[in-house]
Length: 127
Image (cartoon, rainbow, N blue to C red):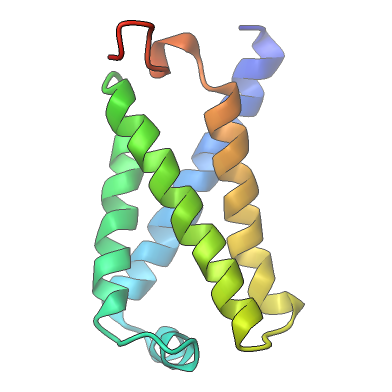
């Protein structure tokens, strides 16, 4: 892995972690804006707790060393959560402002996953 790739990986991963952590905390706190948004999207308010907990745990999984299989599942979860958010906003006719956050986190998820170092990947033995 080149120095440039390492820099890209860590910038994408740190921004991904900050984005997921901050939105996860906001969801766990059930701030009025989040409650209004999740209700508008047609989800129950308790969904904020579920998604908030998984985001915070996902950030830990992405940042700690080792556990490549857990990292794979975490990247998949982040992908499903952010693509689901995009489609949910699309379904209710939201504008570009609501698409920006999930789209950015989706791109950061892909970049972090794609460029991750070999020691953070599943090897040929599956672990």
